[in-house]
Image (cartoon, rainbow, N blue to C red):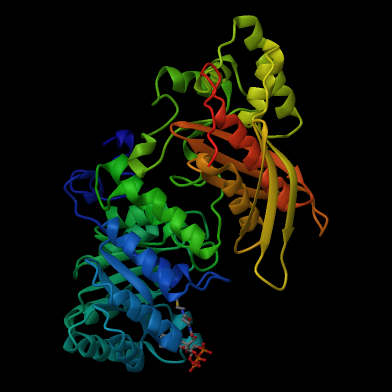
Length: 520
Ligand SMILES: CC(=O)SCCNC(=O)CCNC(=O)[C@H](O)C(C)(C)COP(=O)(O)OP(=O)(O)OC[C@H]1O[C@@H](n2cnc3c(N)ncnc32)[C@H](O)[C@@H]1OP(=O)(O)O
């Protein structure tokens, strides 16, 4: 725990502030499947929701808001698929402040409901066209109804950060009197600063358990979540990857790691956070920015010479916590900012030894590629090293011919490869021409199919239908892996050529006897 001089920053007496007490019990409510899915363009299938719910449960998230039963038939089937999983987590549905929404949630067999009632006058008068008095009366009735039906019941005062605090206090006190399990402070439009969050949550916490639901419109979702915990909130709402309305909700992986790292408060199994983020990015199609905290591609990747050198000397030099803590590995990559230590380490990983003068030339060539704005892959590095050392290397695998057809029938591809002195021909089918070609290449390589494709990324470097695309693959065989990038206007050719180059590199490890490939 390392709060340092920040004790008391969020307000209150540092001696009694729950944020500075590592015995504090904080749980997470994940609303990726509800608020996360409300982000424009996202719609998860029942199977995708079920997979994400299982992953959240594995990470030991306490409450999973599975959706809004009021949305329609399809959504109710989806929520039911999640409740049928019989997970350890409490499964809830969103409900507006109307009884029918609670009935629809009950039809999905949820354990609980988050009942959202208008909190600010703007929502009361302009949106729902009602009065403060009616909201209070309706809330009491709905909470009693939900509790009578055995539901875990949280009342969210929508737009709470812009509400009149005296009214919000009365509303939430009524909810508790009616039997609510908990109430929730909602910074619905991400408007609050931490002082306002602290003021509201500490007021409501006088009456019973309080949750915090914060959005990131001002980039303060996490700050407000922490201020809420400091003020006594014991359940924090968030979404995986920070998906959600507009600028999104606070990201649960950021809440979990901030509470753990900075305040010693454990919430979930943090080693699951990276795979959770990947699963949600894949299902939603919303890719993470590389610099995203915790789960972004670059969060534990080092390129610049000074950082790489420092990290090679002490792996905590440029990282706040080890990548394994969130289920990741550290990566050293090469580019314009590479120095000698990083280049030598990368070469050693591929079994290539260089003397000091050769290393100087290798670094110069890496920087030249970097200066052209390009990434430097393992294949680039190995080609540079061969050139600098004057070593001749014979390719073992080469593409002689490739045809792929799609449109109409099942996508098919055939390839003719030279593997050592032999020609091998194979064909394959797949979900598209690239997939078919990849299947054909694997078939042709035969018994070295134990080469695995660990990552495959496509970038369009120019626009338009004749765009040049770059395919970058990372492939491995045993504990040896290589990255290769290839550019072409034809994505199938770029993919096959990158994969074949990677396989070729993996079949010959510098410094090791080439393995003889048997016929299959
Ligand atoms: C803070 C949040 O994230 S809010 C959650 C947002 N989630 C969703 O909207 C879920 C998906 N929504 C839907 O599928 C649809 O909006 C439905 C099925 C819920 C309702 O559809 P419709 O009946 O066509 O209503 P519509 O979407 O046009 O307007 C929303 C209605 O909900 C009412 N409403 C909004 N908030 C509340 C509330 N907290 N309590 C009660 N009623 C509310 C509005 O007043 C409006 O009612 P009105 O038509 O009588 O004015």
